[in-house]
Image (cartoon, rainbow, N blue to C red; front, side, top):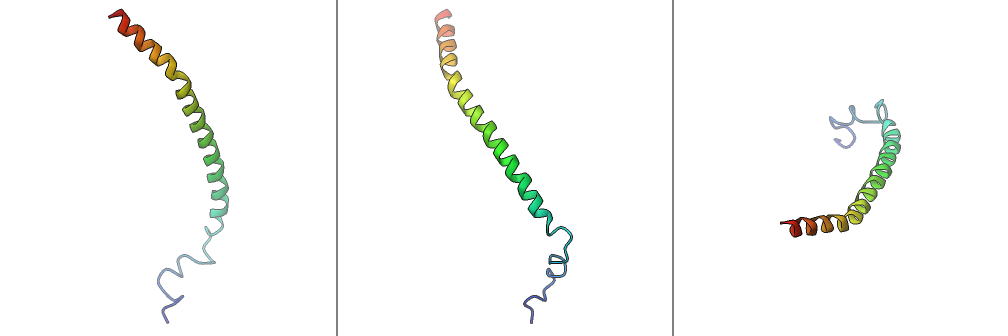
Length: 65
C-alpha cells in the first residue's frame, strides 16, 4: 500500500518540528482577530457618527456657491 506511504508523509508528520507551532500561532491569530474586529467596529461607528457632519459640510458648500 500507498496509504500512509506516500511522498508527503515523511515531510509532514509527527516528527515535524513545526507541528506544534500551529497551536501557538492559533492563539496569536485569535488575538489579532479580536484586535482587528475592535478596530473595525470603532471605524464603522466613527463613520456613522461623522455622516451628519459630512452632510452639513456639503450643504454649506452648496449654499456658498
